[in-house]
Image (tube, rainbow, N blue to C red; front, side, top):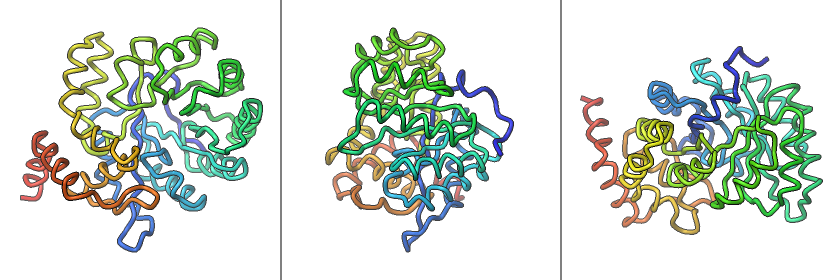
Length: 310
């Protein structure tokens, strides 16, 4: 059953940290490898942690692995922060994951936008309604990566009972503003494109943002969020500029190195969480790995790792 956690809606205005999914050398789930990542994110003050997000290679997991992943994340977090659980793929899989996530004690469900080539706007509404029913009252956060679904559909999705927030993962601030205008003022809007897009999306009302960086450097994510909360866009942009090399590497190969860079960084820091499963890229090229090592050294993260080992 769900644990007693704070009201999820206001916390969505903070940082939604998307956890990696650790594997061992035989490509099996290795949840305990995530412990230092979770501990660091909690200590830094990340507001929400998410299992089975895209940084967690959701589409590379079987449904049973995703169920195990959410239970493992809940155990590692141990009530120190709310857990948001990603659900998706076929409606049957999404319903099964909603029930498993509720049993694990998740504070809410993040519904991945269906990638079906024949998805329809009204079918998406029905999909979310089925998930909400299976969640038995758990708050729902919509994860919209493609705003081409249209404003009418977005308005209907936000009206589904239980929907409290939307992660807007499209680089379209003006369309976000129109979606916000058309939906209930109670919906919390979250920038779903991580730190680089947080300032422009925040400027039109998406106060929170998602982050894969929290696996590696949560203190920087928290500092960016604090700057945006204070309205200091100049400082926020300066902090983001200092991590540009990291984010540029993640965007290479058609965004196929997104998780690869995060897991490679953890390995360089002595916190190996295994490889990235195909179709993601693995491993980094020599050039990419050299650039990543330089970035981590510049941030002082390699020095911190060596100091902890001494």
